[in-house]
Structure formats: structure tokens, C-alpha cells
Length: 215
Image (tube, rainbow, N blue to C red; front, side, top):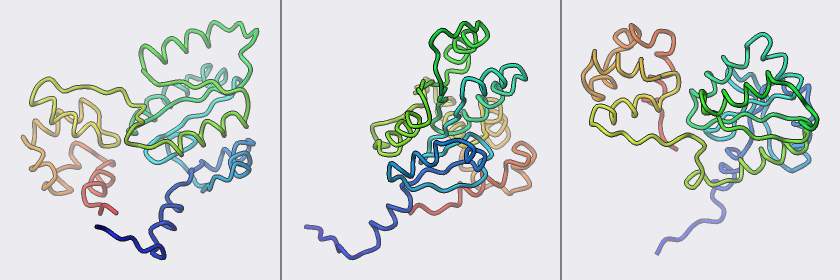
């Protein structure tokens, strides 16, 4: 029988981990204050990708006006590609869609679903968005995954899929690594210089993940 010390620091550590990381540019919205009102712990810092990070989920938030603007300069398509580098991802579109006749947005929604395969959540306002984020934070990881599951059908695809689970490694890069090093063991044991030829500036992130301790 296992006994647990009720005074150990495990619970406090869990509380630290269960927070939402917010990109500092989102401070212009009311979502952070709504999260605080809901009793959610937040941390504001610069996020290179997305607006909110919840465990291994990255969230891109767009108001209707933001979405229209990002469609005009095509910034949204790059952002969709970026968030897909995370294990789980989604797009929250915030605002009132009633009586909105905009074929550009409708075409984007179709493209988002069929081409980019990014899940979309529609929220009414900042409070509604904050509630969705709270639900994501409280959802158990073992029964919740927003990433489309892809079953490997060949031994080679199994190896490729392992590499593609790393941030910033897609199908092309995974094949290049395997063609050069021939096995996952060789890749993980390779020198930084050897990996840098293929991974470029992303080599440090790859090595940090390989050597990171599990806590």
C-alpha cells in the first residue's frame, strides 16, 4: 500500500504548472482579466507562436476585425502553419457572426477545415473565450487531444511520425534526417554540427527536448 505525505510540495508544483501562458500582446484584450476573474493563474510573456499556451496546446485568437485584417495581408495562413508545430492546436474566432456576409471569411473557414485541418472554436466575446480556455486547462490530457491522429502503416512511417512529433519538424525534414542517419538512435546520438545541416537554427530546440529531464 502506498502512503502520500500531505505536506509534500507536489501539490504546490501542480498549481504552478496549471496555468495559462499568455502572449504579452493579448494584454490589449479583456481575456486575461476574465481569466483572473475565473481564478485561473496566468503568466504573461512573449510567445513566438500563438496567443495562449495551455500545457501542450497552442491557441491562436482572432476577433472578427483581426481575422479580416489578417486575411487581407495573408498573415493568418502563416500563423496556421506555425501553430501546427505544436502537438495540439486550435483557432478561436471571437465576435458576432450574425448578419456577417463576407465571402472571404467563409472561404477561409472552408480552407481552414479542409486544407489546414485546424480546429475552430467560435466565441461570443472575451468572457466566452476565457471560459473556453478554462475548459482546456482543466481537461485531462489522457482523454483529450486536438491533433488529428494519423496511424503509421509502414515501419518507415512509424519512424517518420516519431520525428514529426518534435516542434518544427515536418514530413520533409523527418525524411531528410532518416535518409542521412538511417535510425532514430543515430539521430539522437548525433553531434550538434551533424544535425544543424538539416535542422538549421532549430537544432538547439531539438537537442534541448532530447536531453530534457522528465519531472
